[in-house]
Length: 637
Image 1 (tube, helix red, strand yellow):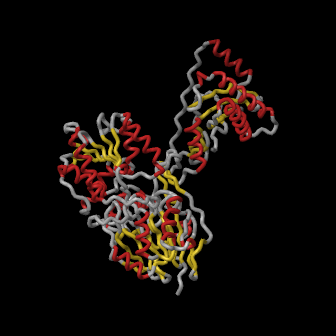
Image 2 (tube, rainbow, N blue to C red; image 1 turned 180 degrees about the horizontal axis):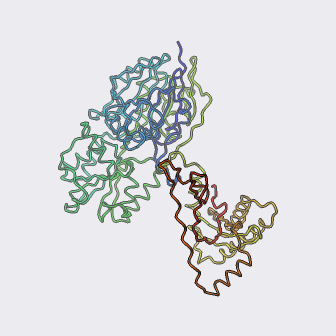
Image 3 (cartoon, rainbow, N blue to C red; image 1 turned 135 degrees about the vertical axis):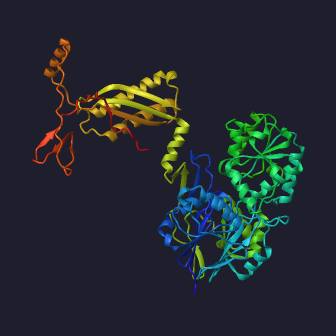
């Protein structure tokens, strides 16, 4: 029986991170990884970005399970958000599942989720049409794995993050024999890591990297601040080992790092002596040449944390004169500008910067020759390059074609593309709508392109607020425009601009008041357009313009002239008014079953047995002064 197969990327293609892929076999959906990515510079105020799974919501009954390759954020980071909507089992290695549980425990909606399953390279899970198995790979975290989905049409292989390293230690080693066996059994398609595909240079072995870290610690006469991704267990172990050999103590920063270190230690994936670690308070009593600060930053993002240290914004640990910032992570090309800014900040703070990538290729991802070796071992009929920007996917495709793979057997996909295999043919089918889901604070998906555009404008050109009070009945402007500017121009230094802006606002408002077909929306839009045109003409900037129109309340009760005259006379006489008689006590109703007081409007009435109602006297209430009320003050942006 032939199987109909669909491969759908929800992230991880034409971008860095956010790996999530669905393989649909005869209507059953298998999810491969569920990761996030950190925002780039234009995503102002966004914490993280996760995949959009609207398609999966519509087909949630067909989802079989989630399979994880490793414990980095780009593979497991979106899991808490996913599991808050989808109650499906999750499979991964012991280390991966332990880190996934840490992630989920921080999300109140799913902190009690317990459908996790630990697998290893010997595990096979039979789902009927599909048998899922795993193979060990080399990455910067223990127990990373690739995933194999065996179907009637051949095997679908997902490599996850990988590289080849002949010096890798147990827990990090690739099973070459298993890869060869998978290839011999027949591979229909492989989804393969492309993050380092452009690099023609061989990766440095982890042994060489460990020696470089030790050398840096040994020859640096001062404090070393190591920038490292929190979930890079291998790098953390190398830092610990180098610190022991050079007589340094290590200070961990942040609860996230401490949780990961404790988890890895409890599983036997990380080893160190108890006296190696010190607290920030203990650093002051130690010689700087005997200390190392391991900085991973919030959510494992070390570069931004180094910036805060350089700017003296951290609560406990900041950069000091003579510190060496040692960047042991390899940031993506998208962060080149951020890294350059960070270097500048460190030098301004009196420190120095050294990056391990300046000396060697320290990536945890396969370079060109590694990718070609993987293809030779697996011998797939089709290749789907994943995990990387378009140029990286293209470089991977070219590397495959150098081995003789036909160009029409390589598919560079975008998010939402549907690659379909049916009746012996692989090709693109009708795609689905897939975008990004922004996480800002506790908000999930409530930030769209319009909000991001407004944030960008606010950051670039500021905001211009104009407040006007009108009397619509009299068709008059009651109070002249009051203008407030933030991040646009300094008001006191630009009085002429403010004065002319006020006149433009008044003219636009008056024209709308004189119009018989008065409309609030048109009024605000008219003010915004006239003001925007003038401000751009004068400053070549386009701030966010927020017109706030206040309307005088026309519905308050006015005192008559007679009332006013009488009030004036009473005040003039200045005679003490007679005391008001006390209200008579209301007779109590006899019997335990007497009905209770009922309230209607402003009057409270007690109904007696004979049906008569006795009214309480109304309290004298102070009349509040009438004020202008805001009308249509909220702007939809």
